[in-house]
Each structure stands twice: as structure tokens, then as C-alpha cells.
Amino acid sequence: MQAGEPGDIIKEKLLEGLEVTLWDRWEVNEDSSLAKFIQTIEERYPGLEVKDIMRGNAPIYFHAIMSAPGKEAEKK
Image (cartoon, rainbow, N blue to C red; front, top):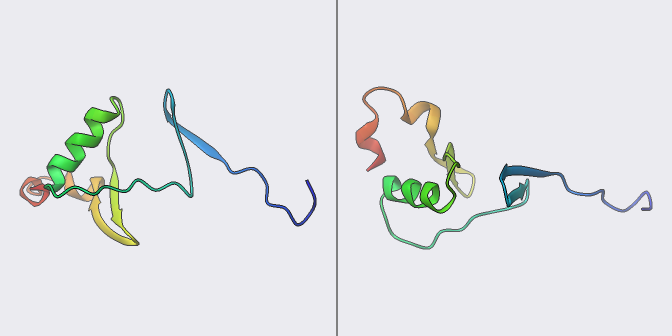
């Protein structure tokens, strides 16, 4: 590798057989509720727990905030 070339990208292992990088995006093209979306992802990737959801750079869901008592209705 020469000085002007980028280094290898760091991969994070989320689950066995599922690695992601800082540059990965998961695009979803279905109309559903937030709760249904989270359920779909967690069923598709058993063992994975959805923590944060962004649309572009706008936050839609933050697990730490939405898991607080009284916030259940906002997931629908």
C-alpha cells in the first residue's frame, strides 16, 4: 500500500455471518409501523436488537429514550 491509498476498512461483527462497516446502509422500502419494522429486522437477524434508526441524518428511534416507561405508544 502506498501513502496515498486508503487503508482497509474496519468491519464489525454483529452476528455470525453478519459483518458491517461504517459505510454500510440498510435501506427499507416498505410502508409499515415502526414497531413492525423493528420486529421484521429482529426476526430476519435472530439475536440482533435494534437500537437506533436514522433516516438520512435525522433520528427516528433511539432505543434508550423509547424504552423509557410511557413511550410504548410512540412506537406504533
